[in-house]
Amino acid sequence: MTTKAAIKVMDCDVHNTAGERLAEYLPKRWREYLRFVGRRNHTSTGVTTQQRPGACRLDANPPGGGLPGSDPQFAREQLLDQYGMSAAMLNNLDALAGGNAPVAFEIEIARAVNDYNLEEWLADDSRWYAAISVVPDHPKAAVEEILRCHELSPRFRQVILGSRSERPQGNPKYWPIYEVASELGLPIAYHVGLNKYGHWTGVGDMTYYYEQHVGFPTAGQSLMSSMIFEGVLERFDSLKIVLTELGWEWIVPFAWRADGAWSLLKNEVPHVKRRPSEIIRDSFWFTTQPYVEPDRPRQFDALYEQLERAGLAEKLIFSTDYPHWDMDSPFAATPSWLPDETKRALLGENAAALYGLELEV
Amino acid sequence: MPSAQRALERHVVAHRSEILEGERLIVEIAGRSIGIFNVGGRYHALLNVCPHKGAELCRGQVIRGVSSSMPGQIALEAGTRAYIACPWHGWMFDINDGKSALRSNRVRARTFKVACEEDEIVIYMRSRRP
Image (cartoon, rainbow over all chains, first blue to last red; front, side, top):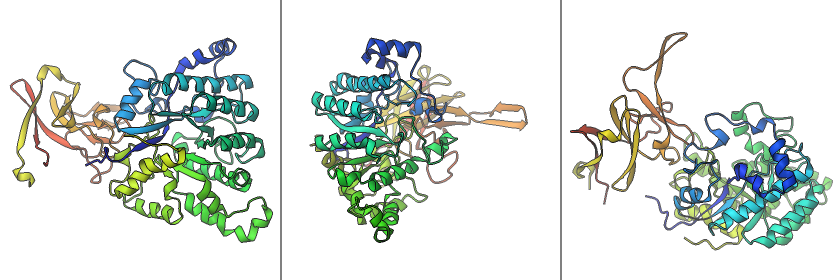
């Protein structure tokens, strides 16, 4: 029934982790700090449910021990080989910056994550690609780290930032990061949550895990809005933004709403030279997971058609979110009735075009 | 060919000593991954694919039914009523007939006939369409 062999899959959101071994990649001063003091991350969104420790599926614990996502060989078998994937993007989330830890410590942690990814994952299988971790609220150090990783490997294929930061993401303080990313041709992936600064909602943090779990689009809207209205995509017109695990079913109505006020309010923002919908179409991509599950499965078609009519269908890129419990598997979660051509685009070709890759089976 | 004409095949999967009470075994039979469970001495067999998003259903938790006659009194349900809960999103299916615990007719886990015949655990399944 599946056409695995014919359709190339790229997974655009995988969460590997160094676990406690991250310490091995830190300089002594911070290795000891980690041992005696710890990470200093302790906000509400660090909490996940007991039923799914670390928000992971129960069957992703490597046989040799360690956290889900900490064993490259097991991940290779359980993800890449299991689904016949051609490529996968490692969005390691270990560098969660709390905003309440020493600056140098956070910067070293981000660097350690990149070194770990390079040495233990990118070296292990050529199908892995990795996002570059940086601390966005220290843009100078972030730029240096992006340049360093870019030199180290062409498989550092994007920069990962979080939907939480000190200021809305379009703020000029972050522009040096956008500048270097667009010069190097590296997309910026905004992942939901990540980091502990600021608040998830406009008015504080959510109370319940369930609430948080359905709150991904909230984060996505405010960040997309900020990027548009601050003029980031005019200043850096080749910059590509990947909204990762932020939903996509809301994009078109948001674009309508934003365009609706264009003729009325554009004079306030002369630095924004194009309609919001055009900016979205030119510069934004969206990962699929978690797929929205309509009351009647076929209602998915209306959402997809809406994207198509807005010229956004080729912006949809498949992701699993392995090893989290709410992961989507490529062939079981993607609506089976979609034509092969659509599946091919969604599951691999759109991502290949974005990242400039040739996917091999 | 029509299902009535597809042969019911008998597959010996294990010796009874390999799946004791509370245990399970996941095997591949004719290209399908199948989980066999021993719950309270009875055997159940399920296709190791969750109808929700294709996870390996049989790697999930087996959850026994409970009943309560009054506050403070909780008992495991008599008999072998049990559920398998998917290791991904936690969807639960009756381990005996595959029916969803919550979603009534909309989804169902696939079950197979399983029996213990002279100390051998045996699965009956129809051959796949050619």
